[in-house]
Image (cartoon, rainbow, N blue to C red; front, side, top):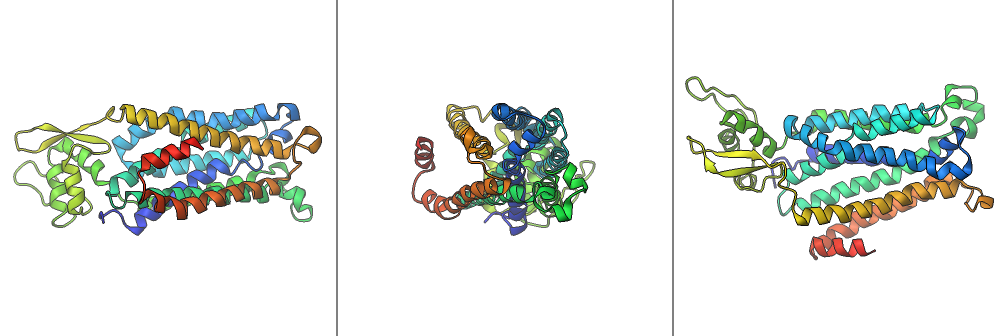
Length: 369
């Protein structure tokens, strides 16, 4: 088992994934009600709800490459911390919305400041091996399912407290901001995720190796740290470099020596001291397989998002408007049931199936559904 595949690192990654799912899904239960409270008519409700949903994912799409660059330059750990914290602040701001433009800007910033959905997956890929990679991504999916279960339910139950409990909250600031409480809760989850990542998340060996090659000593330091102490002794004379790195196991050591690093490749040319050069593989991922996989994944994600935003709109409309006339509580319960189904599949079915069938086969079956 890789040295970084420890409980505290796994817990930090899973909490970051839960935070990602929570801030993405917490608004679905009350979003149509918020838009309606801003003065939008029922016939235009779908358009305005779609605008809020689109701006979040569009901003996340446009900023994803920037977050990837930042994670390559500064590390996975600091970008995960910054992403969780920035998105949490913007989610709280969204709960204070008193105009559609303000809500649009707050949600856009929430998407732009959060790049954890890709960085956390990169982290898991870099600290697992062939035997544990399925387990790692299954835990991420399980964490996403937990967020999908809890966020809609809490978003529905905690919104409009002054309307639901007038004896307690009528005349308070929660009557002015009826959707602030679930957004505040999302902010608390995000701040907690940032603190856990700050104290529990280690940097990945591939990133440390890639950064250390700028000194032309890091590769040897990484190999030495896997056999001795976490601190490399000063080299003789003027080339003193002191680096503290986590201990690696032999399999991770071999992985670093190969050219299949997630964020960098080792060239065949060696420098004068015999140490191979590590070059950033900025476009190594652009292959037909990854492009087709990303395209199909995008189509599946689009279908899921359309369902997430369309169902609350229909549920909020009255039967005369061909809707269900649900309250925020009922919408949250319905979305939570779908989250339970996702959690059941990811927790009990995915790991079992992935150990018995090729992932490409499972992916094709899922796409065909």
